[in-house]
Length: 394
Image 1: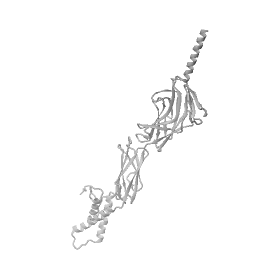
Image 2 (image 1 turned 90 degrees about the vertical axis):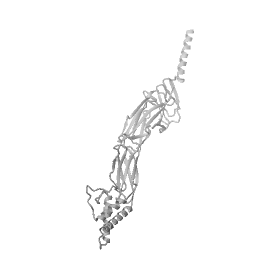
Image 3 (image 1 turned 180 degrees about the vertical axis):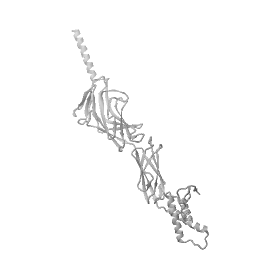
Image 4 (image 1 turned 45 degrees about the horizontal axis):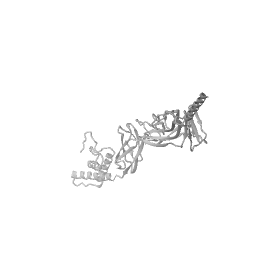
């Protein structure tokens, strides 16, 4: 009898030990309490496939080698943004049993580098870099092998997604990379993430399209109208890594641009000119597919200063010629004065638009003094002088 009793005692001890491994540390399975669930949002992931869980279930028992999936909300939550990387925590929870018998309480995260999609180095399009990972909420720094891989299908309103499927089989680093590419995206790109255990329940992550800003300066911001003056336009792309050869399109609501497409240099700068047309306000805009556009206001003012300088210069020229010749008995007639003023004003206007009829090459190219001189010298000469190649400034 004694050997039989000893055998029974040993058998009961083994049974007790086995029972203890199921519900204490070193357990082979665990029971997970479910709360606030919706139908179809709970799954059990097994190596052989996915099993549904009844929506009425309050608890689900999972074994080692299985993962329980639970969707806890509808949308991801941005939990942190560090070093230019924003982390989106997806609304999924995964529960399992570790090889050592401890509990696995996992979350799924997507890190977005640079905060969104940014221009490529050659500004030919935009690239967004994502990294998918699974974190252990109880031990975020540890690396655990998952009982079964977790797979995701990724789609987005972009030109390419590479790769378009992600498989995760461990917690912590390294995260799985994914790249989005688009030539001309909108202001926001929508990324659809479908887990293999909930294909019909995608999660949407919106990525901002980050365009470096263009700045535009117009100098001067007030010029004389009717085509008499020009303004310099300076365009700059700030925060762009390789701006050279980036094409910027210029438009103006009024005025004449000397070019409508400007290529930026290595410093991100480009220049153009605009000549006034008529009077009033004009708006100059600068746009590029890879940059955030901008605009600047410009005023075309009545050319009173030009008119006064041209008329006075012509009058001084006519009077100076009359007094200089010392002709006796000859009076300065109104007709002669008007003719001289007309010639002077015409020469001043011609010089303002780039035609020099004086025979001189003044160093200054604009201003009332130049207008006064051009009108005066032509009125004094009584006609136009053909500029020669050896003409020099006075």
